[in-house]
Length: 380
Image (cartoon, rainbow, N blue to C red; front, top):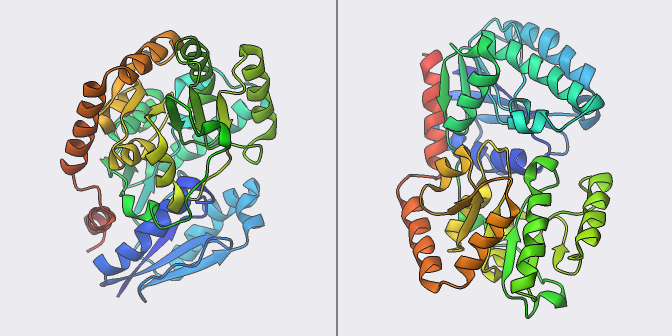
């Protein structure tokens, strides 16, 4: 039985954890002819997997120390790959060995390294760290056998910003999606001030300047003049980034809409559907993403979508969203208002969302099958 090592030490929160939790059980069922050794953080939750998938847990402190990660990827990992006679290595989270002695598949899932709008806004040590991380990712990609992205938009972004990898062998592998996993948890109870809210807008996301929050706050201020009871529900809290959270609080107070924006903190993935069901619209103002699970979740719960007019959002939603210029809060507010006042337009978006979901196999089973095919391109 051939052995493949999967490097997943960067999967420490949010989408990374969801990806592994859904992907690994399916991979074990789809590829029983290989043994997979998966490097994960010690804090990664226990999951049911097949016997040919073995989790190897590394202490979180070793994964978080940047110099330790570089030493592991550049020196220790290649030596182990030779010593233990692995047939291929798959790096799931942006970084991996720069010089691999065996076939290497590297996944690129963090768009911030390649997003011009983000890099133009960050300063100081954060910008320097981002550029250094990008350099490491680029050096790995230049020598990798396959570069895998979760959307065509992201592969095009990488090619544009990093010409040295333009000729690389890129593949697009859309994430899997299962809305059923979002219904099994405890129902989320919103604060009392949301009980009679209309319209009730929802944006599930974590904190980040590139997520478009300030544009959205400006749009809420405009909407409040027309819909005094409007409420925006956000799944962010101080635990994500206290400094940024506090700056948003001050911005809301400056706009006079602090009572209209409810920041409820992180929500478990298996409870998220209860919030979609309460919403009149899901707004997706993010300026930089690699995939966009929230848009699929909105379609899966029949919630109309208003999204920033970006290539990624068009790729995922197609005609299942109404778009507005990404940096124009007035246009965002106008699109939201027009939808709130037009029942038939909302119904059409719901229908388009159903059509979009049924037009493609978004399942994790499909994802695992395509992943297996990628491995088989390099390993007989």
